[in-house]
Image (cartoon, rainbow, N blue to C red):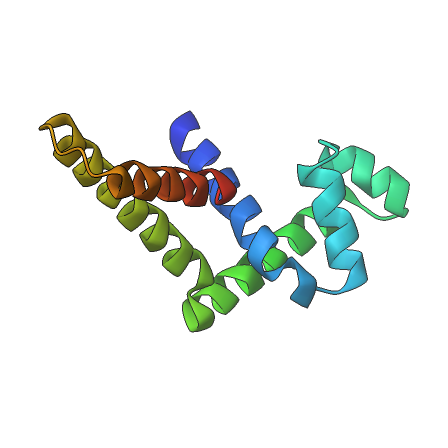
Length: 121
């Protein structure tokens, strides 16, 4: 169960990275307090002068909103697919190089793929 919750939290954060700019200032503020500053729901409620339940409800609505954006725009899905394809290409290239192919362009291509993967993290 913890792995599922952790994966869900990671997904929620990644969706926020892609679509956070589309949220209201209040939604962004509460999301950042919760995810980046690691405030509890009670701490956010006290800071925002509201109830814990109101903060919880807002976070749930934001999650639904972000999922709605992803369903329509698929930016996260495309990003994940691109990273998978880059890793697969790098693995194939590494195998090709390890088989003794010595063209210097292969090493340069490998470096480019590594750079792309590192920038995507």
